[in-house]
Length: 99
View 1 (cartoon, helix red, strand yellow):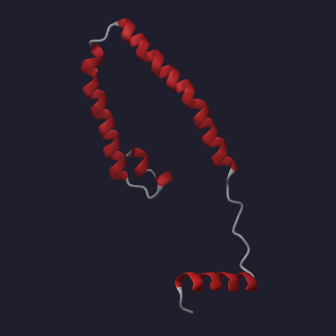
View 2 (cartoon, rainbow, N blue to C red):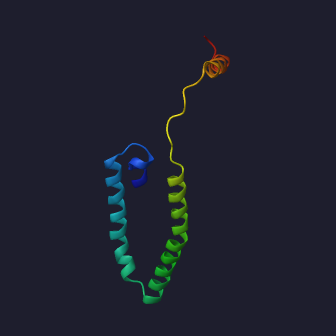
View 3 (cartoon, rainbow, N blue to C red):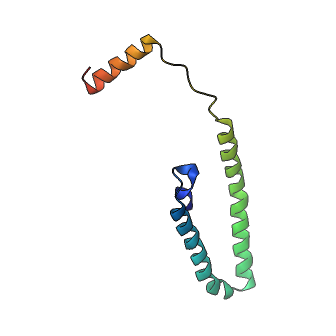
């Protein structure tokens, strides 16, 4: 929900972002009683799993950042020539009909 409401992936929607963070906070609050019943070996296993996941996802995030940084748009393309305009018009007329 948070990503869907962020401006990176469409229009910014503060209500969706707020609801997403409220959902995350509520799930953390609901998990605290369960987490307090864990013994130390279970906690170490959980921390190890989360650490392994984080170490595994870091190269993935780094790859995304590098690819997005390298794919910037340099500028607008040149306007179509008359020949290109006629070609596009011919294709559109064939596909959708009309003049």
